[in-house]
View (tube, rainbow, N blue to C red):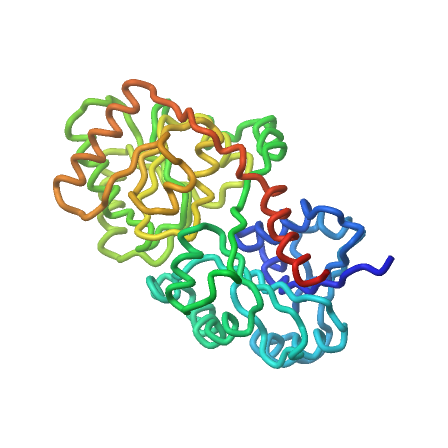
Length: 376
């Protein structure tokens, strides 16, 4: 039986594990009926060690370019990748990171993965080269796609509104979590820097950048500290330094030196991160905008109560089982966050909702169903 040949923009698999890289990785691992498909993974660089396990799958081919255009990502994407796609006579192309290369065959079916509208809402939080690429290709990519798969209902709704895209050609495939992997991470010996953390701490997980709203959370934490209603409480930020203001970093540094109750951890591996979730007292996420929210989903897997910003994507994950508050920076919002946090920790509240539907198997199944609409 002839297999369907599906091309994938696999450049994220040439870098350490990240949001889009994880989505592609886990989707390919969990893809149903693998004997039906052969995936051609296109990149201008070698596959990264974080994704090496994929090459053991029999239905994947790593298609690394060896031409002179492969030395520059822009040249590769605009010139070499379209040439390779034409040469390989694909049945379908999956643009998993919400852009498609130019000069594709007119008859080739293209399915676009859509993550978020950060380009239009918070462009300053993107790397300049990524912002330029997205801005150059996004409208063309949306128009060229036969179908767009978003990672949340809210993202789908926003995308349809932004581009006036037909709703009948849009669907959702939620990201998931791999429970087997998480349990294996927890079985590993806990590292010293996690083991030596204070017994009582709030955890936040993300890059420190404006969209994540850390200045607001700092104000909330100061309010809790001043009240002294949770003695010996710390706040652990798991994430690298991003594009936040110098003023905020100075405030954060001053508080850390003066009170020694704010801890920033960078470069955590998966085992350290999940031990960090497991031992936390509460999860915080005050994002102004998210396409989805993997850290929230991971925290809920560990049954942690969460206090998060009142945005639609978080409601899709936590339903009525976690606490939502606005983040308008006025004293009322700061007080409501502080009060909810204090009560949740002192009463030892835990998450009692259901996140069992958020699996990579379900995500891969939804994506496969879209592919089959066109392949059949």
